[in-house]
Image (cartoon, rainbow, N blue to C red; front, side, top):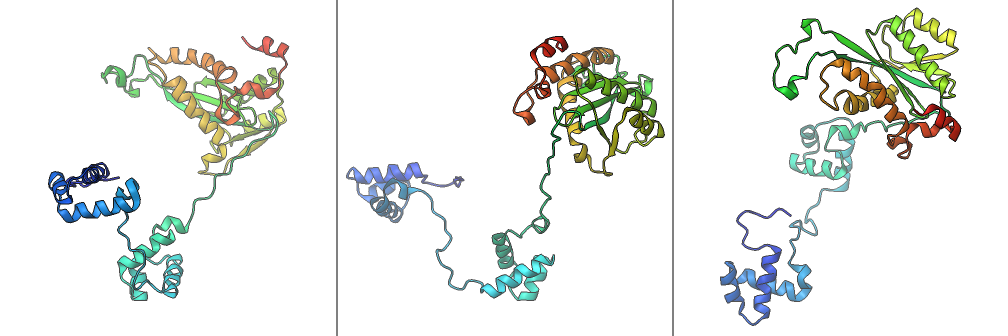
Length: 317
């Protein structure tokens, strides 16, 4: 509850006032002690006798009944015009109703914001039934560095990539059903690197007993190349590309990149980018084998592969 800065009585003060009267003081004396007029003291005393302590709470000042409410036909006309994308001022001029009344009616109808006329499309989540039915592949570009960054040291000297330190490209892959992930750092995002990563990813999943059937990528030039198309054909994969400007279609890879940046790339102050690269396989193992995943009931991704205990001991290192 928002109390006015000059308010003399709060619900606690009102209770203190009525207790004083209840103990034998006159309403006038209790009012003087509380710094209010006798009429206010009488009001709270009568309300306390009728309703008890609950009657000392604030009440809405809105009237229970309007003397001249807006007729229902006018309300229906206001709603119809609003659904035709009319503004409040236009509706007021057309219906001869004040803009303030139109605004209140639109708020009551839930149409005061134009976004209410075009509700957002509900999020459609999908998940393949079996591991290997679909893998998502994407690339994240990271700057290389030779010293701790300026966000920690406060020193921007030598922090520009124009010095020739360069970039490195984190190629990521995640299985749609199990969320088991695979990643490599490669020098570029050209078709040769994309093809090499695709083959490495398929080989990695094969070591876990997963046969990859489909691969989903965005519309990057490396994925539209003939070399990548031929690699998919040689591996027996169906290649699916997302619609332009719809990253949510490839959302599992996008979300994995966010997690990797937060828990690996930016998780600590690495002395140089080579140390960060060396940490990637360690973090990736923890992600696949130990880290609870909220989308799969807080279990690690490896739990969805249905491996036997012997396979777990053989693969876990």
